[in-house]
Amino acid sequence: MLYAGMDIHKRNTHAVVKTEKGEVIKEDEIRTKEKKIKQFFEDIEEEFEVAMEATGNYEFFYETLEDLASEVHLANPYKTRLIAEEKVKTDKVDANALADLLRGNLLPTSYIPSKEIRNLRRLVRRRVKLGKQRTEIKNQIKDELRRQIIDYSNRSIFKNDGIKFLEDLDNPIIDSCLSIYQTIDEELEIVEKKLTDQGMEYEEVRLLNTIPGVGPYSATLIFGEIADINRFSSEEKLFSYAGLVPTVHQSGEKNYHGRLSKECNKYLQWILVQCVQQHIRYCSNSKISSFYRKLKKKKPNNVAKIATARKLLQAIYWMLKNHDEFRVKG
Image 1 (tube, rainbow, N blue to C red):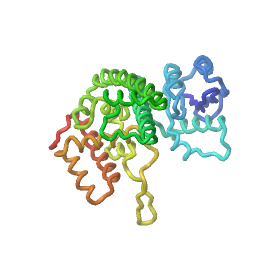
Image 2: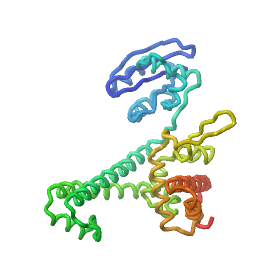
Image 3: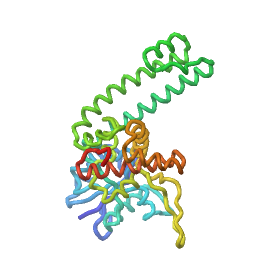
Image 4: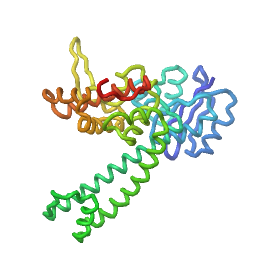
């Protein structure tokens, strides 16, 4: 078996192939093009595995190599740097470090979901970004109304009558924002339709949709980010993945709990907090809502929400493990 390491970049990629003993049999800097990458590996007759870091464009490289290599490994960039930190850091050094970690069976890897789940993730993350863009436009309109001292407190300004109210103001800033808002709103409707159609094909999404406060969009986002629940051997590991546990610093016999870890799935963390707010609003008699109310009496609201999001995620973990619907009194 041969072992390859790739330091991938937008324009050029440094690749190296080594034997089990660490001897370099091929190394080059190649253009980041599908044809060039395949040409580099096509003349290698022995079976080989490839390691590369989990970057935003890893899917291009993964799909280019999955039919050529015996296995493609996605290295966890945070853990890899701890193991293979170098004073001199170049593309060549990084590629060689990845190959060495792989051949030594020391490579900390990241999970690679199936192609259909990756496509679902892209769609649902697009929905998240569109939602944030729409919120930003709404805030710009409200800022302009406040600047002009225009009272809108008794209006739902983004409903039909409210839109007419905004249009009648004949304000160029608001008119510009409204044009963008309506375009985003139309695109959101299209994406949400696709999400509902695709998401509800999965049993996991249908199960999550039984939780009060979790709709098809939220359920699809949660499922897309978790993917295979069996990759988490315990609920605590899922909590850590979602960034819902504080960092811990130990000194002697004392443990210090800090802020939430930044090394987490931000999409999952965000949507769980959103779902908790909806759940405690519409399902006051559940154990999750009761937990929130009790905790809020002695903790700040944000702390209570995070802890309750963890409680919700615990329910999600066992729902997906046991293929079970949500039970309010369960």
